[in-house]
Amino acid sequence: MNTIPTRYLRLASVLCCVASSAAAQATRDSAGIRIVDNAKPVWAPGREWRLSEKPILDIGGGAGADYELRRIVGLTRLSDRRVAAADQSTLQLKFYDASGHHLKSVGGKGQGPGEFRDFSTITRLPGDSIAVEMARMTTIVAPSGAFVRNVQFGPFAPGVLQIPFVVALGRFDNGTAVVMDYPQGQRRPAGAQRWVDSSSLFLVDHGGAVVRALGKVPVVVFVAGTTHPTPLDFGPGALHASSGRAIYLGFSDQYAIRVYNSDWTLERIIRRAWTPHSLTARDLDTYVDGWMQMWTKKTGAEREAERKEMREQPYPEFLPAYSAILATPAGDLWVREPDLTGAPGCWCLAGLSTVPSTWSVFDADGQWLGDIAMPPRFIPLEIGADYVLGRSRDRDDVPHAVMYRLDKPR
Image (cartoon, rainbow, N blue to C red; front, side, top):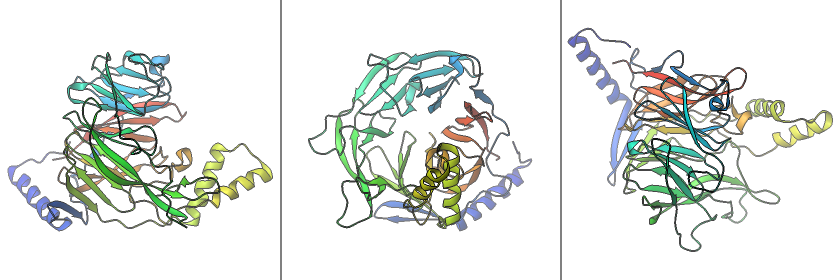
């Protein structure tokens, strides 16, 4: 870690940073809502945050099922430095100590207490309990791994949901959560070939009961099809994250992220200077060829026909402003730049990439601090004060849970 040897130099650094910040950021109020416009990052050379060159923890690839993490959908580090990994392939939570030694696995597929039908991710709650998120409900697990309770969402008024279940969008430390349904593309304006559809949001209490409806937010761009509408590949979409104190929500057709408190009051809008990146013919050719190489088994004329069909699918004119967001307990926001390199593997812009991914870091006030490059073949899932925890794949394509130290020069 870099250190500054004298009080004078520390003061000079602070003054320099303040001057830079003033030029880089503008904050204004609009009907009581703080709008933070960022023209450029404020980190001075040598003050950039960075990850350790090598992981400080690496779990996976070892002998035995306890160290197999075939489909990691969530990771969290508890206050005693244990790590819990959600492995969707076995529907288990796997607990490891600070050195990566397996301690226990809980859950598994089933309908009984402590078993899971499926799950999408996990959230660490105050006191180190873990919320295992799934459609229609959440299972709460104690820090020990013991089953605590199931929380069923609802009931909901007849006709308010587009599909018969909801999922958690984010959680607050006071025990409440925001849940959402998912649009099916049925709200198509007359004659439209592309349109934005919305989800309905609801605030629920710690027991899952609906406190109140929160309205609708744009979620996905749909494209008309011969039989049914489908989401637009690489189109803008809704992205969300929660810090415990706030929920961050944005629609990536522009670089703007809204910050809501536990009363669902809009406190802040974070904006950043952004130049839209055109999705060129060369970009699409590279993506389609990569996808064909990874997934298709067809040959000859059938292969060419499949490639032509995929290449002629509708795509947006520009890449979205961002492709993933994460929030820290301290309120920092990390925002990923869209990356086509890993797109063939997941049909998405936020997957594992063979090149470093770029993340913009904003502090709790919405100030753009600067950008950090994440290692290739790594996706962060949780960011703490001094670590970044995520999933990766090694050169043999074996999944791992890895943690990097986060250095913050002062």
